[in-house]
Image (cartoon, rainbow, N blue to C red; front, side):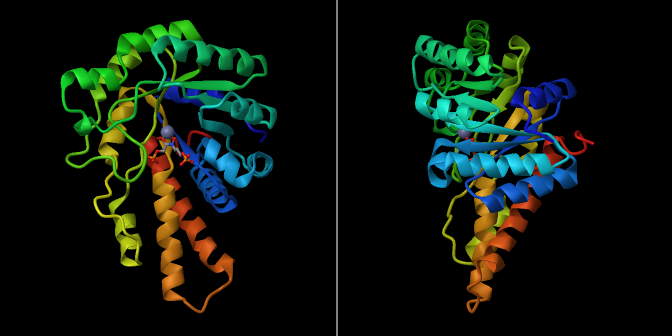
Length: 308
Ligand code: PH4
Ligand code: ZN
C-alpha cells in the first residue's frame, strides 16, 4: 500500500494501547529485514531515517527504496525523519516524500523549542506530514546525581502539557531515563515509569521513547565471540519497555539493536568463511538477523497482528 503518515499509525496504537517500533535504516538490507518482519508479524511499522542516514545513503535513494517497500507490503509503513535538527534537512525530507518528520529542538530553551517546533508544524501540516517534537534531554537516570538535576533533564509533565497546547505537534518524545547507543546504564537499568504515566494523563497525543534498544545480551555475546569489543554494553530490559507502553508510550525507537544484530551476523560469516568474498553471502545473514530481532520487538511492543 502507499506510504501512510505516522499519525495514522500512532493514533491506532494509542487507542489500542500498544507500541509501534520506529526502526532506523541506512541501507537496503536493514529496510528489507524490517519490512519482511512487519509482513510476517502483520504489524504496522515506522521506518526512521536520521540526518546522518540521509547524508550516507542520499535522500532520493532512501525515498525510492522505502516507497517500493511500502507499495509491495500489505502492512502500513510510514517514512519518518529522525532527530531533524536543521530546517533545510526537514524541508528536504518533506519535499522528497517523507510522511513524518521529527523536529528536535530539545537542546533549546522551552520558548525557543516551541517557536521552532511551530515553524515546522506550520510547514508539515500544510502538506499533510506528521510532526514529532522532543522535550527534555536523553540521559541515563543513574548519571543524574541529584533531584534538581533530574528535574532539569527529564521531561517535566506540566511543561509537556503546555508544550502540546502551544504547538499542535502530533507526537511528543519524552526523556524518562533512556539514552542513545549501547551503553545506557552502568548499574540497574531503570526508567521513570511514573513520569510517563503522569505525562500521559496530561497530554492527549502519542508519546515517544527514544534510546529504547535492549542491547540484547545474546546478540552482544555472539558479536563478542566473533571479535567485537563491547565491554559494559547495556540497554533497556524488555520488562521496562512493557511497563513504558502500559504507561502510555506509543512509539519506540530502535537503532542500536539492529546495528548489533547485523554486526554479529556479518562477523560470524566473515570469520567462519574467510574464503567468501561475495557480499550477498555476508550481508544476507545480516539482513536475516535484523529481521529476527524486529519480529521479536513487534511481539514485545504488541503491534504484531494489528495490521491483519
Ligand atoms: N534514535 C536513533 C538515532 C540514530 O545519527 P544516527 O543515525 O546515529 O542517529 O533516534 C534512537 O532513539 C535509537 O535508540 P537506540 O540507540 O537505543 O537504538
Ligand atoms: Zn533518538
